[in-house]
Length: 234
Ligand SMILES: *Cc1c(COP(=O)(O)O)cnc(C)c1O
Image (cartoon, rainbow, N blue to C red; front, side, top):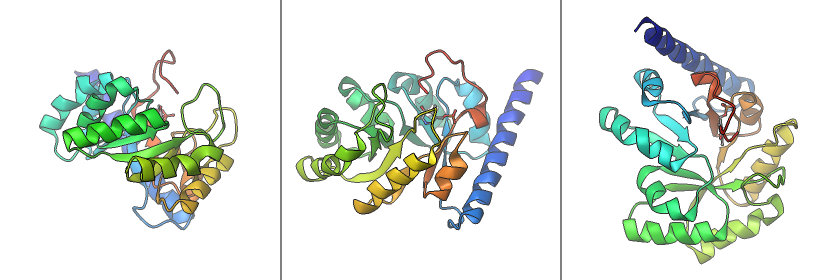
């Protein structure tokens, strides 16, 4: 029990520090106070590990696997009101039904077959999650996301052919490069397509992302501690 309390205190203290630092970054970079939303990335963490964040009033969370999220969030939602859940990992078309049912925001729309499957499921279910398009700003072969040079055409396709409202853009810069050029590229694509929501920046680089216009930063390890390296998917 003592260990659990200590862990809870750790998460609450980390959250407080990150919140203060986001407010500091907003001020430093001339961003409006409260213009940046903290998405607490709770992938690989158990419900018990997430609870201290909920107790500390955190309500926006990110998960990267549909099945894992299904295993822990319905019960947490029954106990805590106002939770907003973001899918930040790749979405297979055969999981679209579950994803639309569970998530408020799907940040990883990145191909036409997924746009079509989302259109169908939104019509069928009457539930409309906010959709962000993921851009593979570093054109990394192993990474999901639409290529930067294909982004404008893909956004048009989503909007015009599939009638999907695209609320935002998301990127994960290459791990071995300075991220700022990638954040700036995502911001330029957003601006020319009339998109105001930018999900970019993680534990190591959210300050640079806020400087370049992030409206959502996705922070995991700085809140919940390190994850096992194996299979953590970035
Ligand atoms: C895991 C993950 C994060 C959080 O990364 P940290 O370095 O732990 O802050 C953010 N975005 C995506 C897409 C992730 O998969």
